[in-house]
Amino acid sequence: GDSIDFGNLQQGKEDASGASNGVRGLFMGGGDHPGPANVFTEIDYVTIASLGNAKDFGDLITARRHHAGFSSPTRGFVAAGWAPGVSGLDSIEYVNIATLGNAADFGDTVSVQYGSSGYSNAVRGVVYMGSNPSSGNVNTLCYITMSTLGNALDFGDVSANHYGTDGVSSPTRGVIGGGDPAVATIEYFQIMTTGNAVDFGDLNTGVKHAAACSNGHGGL
Image 1 (cartoon, rainbow, N blue to C red):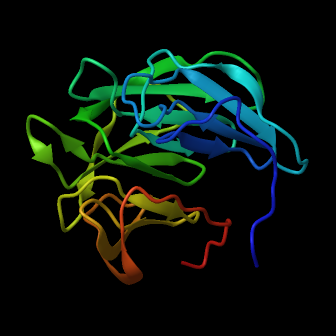
Image 2: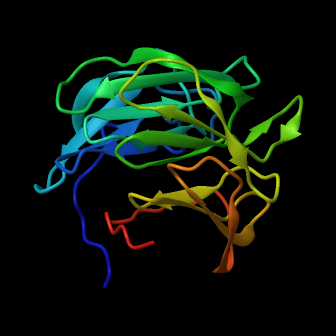
Image 3: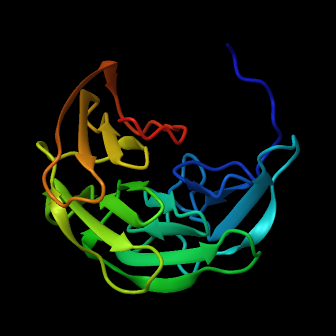
């Protein structure tokens, strides 16, 4: 069925990322349109079970858009992205979702990128890296163990180089869909086993810069 109104963010934005622990939903960073003059550090949050407008959670260390977002049951993460005056970011930041406050430094991704997407189960977070104006699109996946601090490690590759992907996760799989320029490809990987992504199928039509969500089904 159709969606219904929930409420509003603190301000209009695009290219933000999301995280949740099943109780709270976070909207992190982003920028205005048409921009790209304004890029935000703000983190909004909602209580998922209750309708209403988002409230202020805290701030990221670095304003960013076109970044990856993912979460464990306790922590929310942003990784990579685009900020004014730089070709891309490699920093990873995190917050404790149950406690309001500003983000802290976690480590770095394997390279400077933007147009990234994030995937996670309760243990690992995986980032599909995206693009860099200097080196172009890449097909690299990297991962972190979310309960620790440290730099990301190489995970594997996807079959094609693109950015602006969307993706979803189960407790076992990450599923990558779409990308710029508007592709229909879907690929998946096993989150707890490093390795390259493999073909899953296709979307109904090619899309880029989309958003996706999933439940916690572990059968896939």
